[in-house]
Image (cartoon, rainbow, N blue to C red; front, side, top):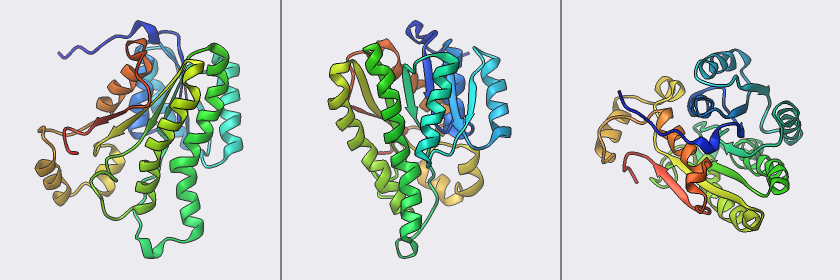
Length: 254
């Protein structure tokens, strides 16, 4: 049986994970609970969140689910206030919430563009603003922004999403500079094509499987725990002098 790292510095830390009720986010919630962290996570599907809570509770402290539309900045602020009231100030923020809806350039309306930016970029910025207030008061903290290899590989069929995910790296570097003297580290975690239930249901077909086989250096498929394991390292004191960097977990695709 494969043994994975235990990070003592994560035990008891308050971790806020956006978009944690499904997919990669759900695996990140469970991974931090396994480390003994106190996890608050957002999502819009309460029934899906129940399964995440059950999985996390089986390996660590029971996480807190906060129903939140991450496109609504006031709901983001309310969610952080609820997490703080329940667990205390936030020590770690994982900006995972996203929507990789497929679309073509010619069909993008102003309203659609704004909605995609709201979930894929704006949500992370204002979550960071909320978390930074707690972290500045504490004199330390960690923010991890999730990007995507989609824009690196020049993926077709979702240009607004890719634009936002490339901007996440710029946001990381800007926040790392502005927050570094307050002891706050900010890094980017960039997943490859992760075999979540949503991806398998909607987009992974025979052509996609062949593309992965041809493009990845490593055999096999990425899963949520591969991304979660990197998130743990970036949040732990083991990476205490790492900031403003991007970490790509894509089996060698890019």
